[in-house]
Length: 249
Image 1 (cartoon, helix red, strand yellow):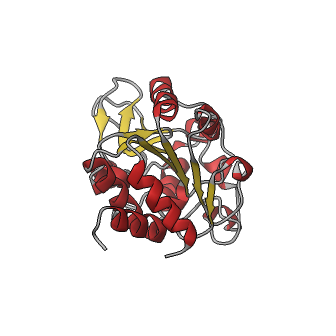
Image 2 (image 1 turned 30 degrees about the vertical axis):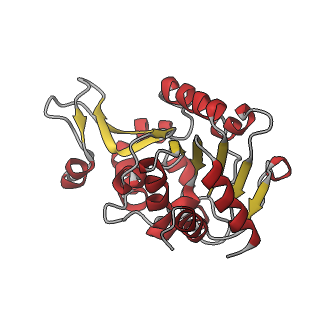
Image 3 (image 1 turned 90 degrees about the horizontal axis):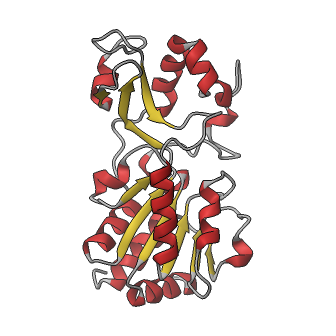
């Protein structure tokens, strides 16, 4: 165990109200690419339109067939399983320590691991809505459809995720995330570059004196404000720290 992981273990053991805020890096060990990675993320894939354009609100409205084809190919990972980071956070919730998981991810892996108090800032691929009647459809239904999915009423179905050019779709989720951060006694941020707003701004709601832990491979704009910065694999760090904290090593 590194010195940083030992400090994290101690803080987890002492904390009673942990909030975890995570991004794409949390799910890379589950085989889901970090789309913003400078080295291997899909945003680096050459050819044609940019990924930002293909996953934008305007492109969905004007080219729904192309949007859905692209969305299915690059955003949906139905066979992905929770990794050690997801499982560690779920265990902390079961032990009454983790009061909320705030995530920028849309893959639903925190819930699959057993976490119940999950705040999805950018929506979820598991929820899809008819734009005409509001009927809801799950991921399995979307995957069973050919081409652009349409509701039995004839309406176009869209994924309940935040597309480029859109603001956060659920103000209540963001407000709940702010309350969670304000009330915590330990904030662990992992797998995110903290550059996408308003999500990144959540760190600013942390009360003075409450430790901020950053677990990320690369630097973030908030490193200087953190009480602890760990440049290691987040799944390995959380797994080790939580197992030792709970006496499961």
